[in-house]
Length: 191
Image 1: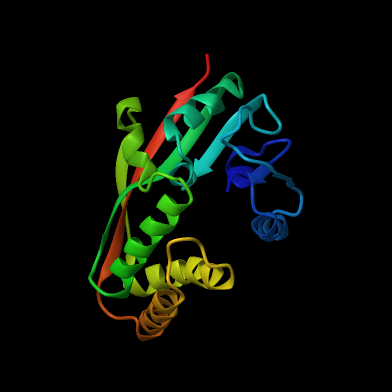
Image 2: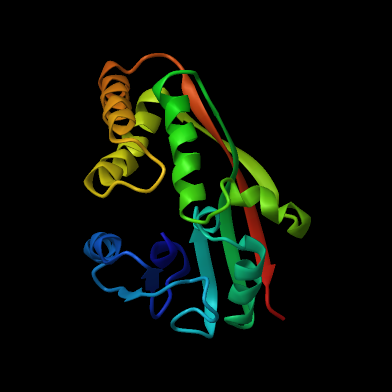
């Protein structure tokens, strides 16, 4: 998306997961992908004109410190664009069960679930993104199937197997209902 909108000379993707970097590399073959922890000081490729982080801060122990460190990784006039969850409205059943388990996974990894809520004092806007329940189930299945391959701490395998079956059913049956993600969108400039 950044490549298509901003037309940069270079796109650098950063993640701690080699598997996810391989997926990203397949989607953006002309990008550069670096295995690194974005919570440890300057980001690879700094100084950057744009740093875009979507649904990252919840997985980090100190989202505010990390966001400020990203700002210091900018070139003069650069901008950090952050999108992170502030909350989720999901119906009871597998979609709410996913939220509960996801919160446990994030906490077990040392993160702060709903990292966007920690950034309120920095401003920005909260937008509501609503998708059909079946679409949310497909999105959630990506994580659940990954968790089944390498079970994170704090999550029972039987719970994951039940959740996978429930989400698969929702994805196929396309029931009425939706999931709303409350997303904090924040811009931080470097002058």
